[in-house]
Amino acid sequence: MSFAKIGIIGAMAEEIELLHEHVDVVSEITKAGITYYEGTLHGKAVIYCKSGVGKVNAAVCTQILLDLGADSVLFTGVAGAVDPQLNIGDIVVSTSCIQHDMDCSPLGFARGTIPFHVRSEFPADERLVELAAAASERLFSGRSLKGKVLSGDQFIASRETVKLLHETMQGACAEMEGASVAQVCDMNEIPFVIIRSMSDKADGSAHVNFSEFTVTAANNSYQIIDDIVQHA
Image: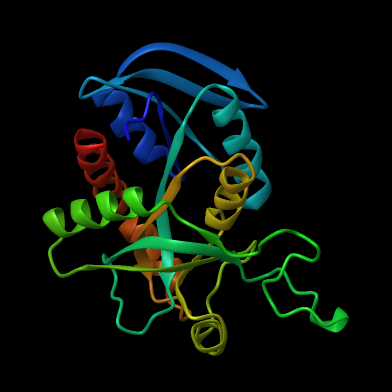
């Protein structure tokens, strides 16, 4: 299976700048305040953009990306480690995504369940997962794992919350967009994978580590995207 137009969403401006440096951009269009750039990378057609923070921005961004012809989606950015075996700089490749802040438990639904929706946990595309995992291992040997990405409109900075998310939802990492991207892709039957660099341990030191790690994370994300596109 080959992709006609690979969609790339970056969470950080630094990632988009790196794409600008390497993609042969042929056109750009702005919709809903988000600019989408089309061009080629390693001879492959790509379209990329910066999502903005949070689930609403990510959902709007993803739907427009698909409407502009993306037939697969790679989303990159940073996250807080939830799995205790992860360290700063490690990579998580999503096996699935779920919203940790979707909580209708007073109505009898398990946390993370979207009431009356066909599914609440969205599996990533197996081929894209393997491409991303292979790229991560080539570039950052021994520093990547495949796991569940938890998303919510919250910046997690509590040891107690991290423990809860790991134990009750079996999450590998927590961030603010992935499950939204995943749900939009799932509803459109478009393959996706989420790739996150661990910027912090989500334990209260997040605000210090996050700012220090942003540039490194952007470079790591770009290298993985570049490798995936080469092998897709």
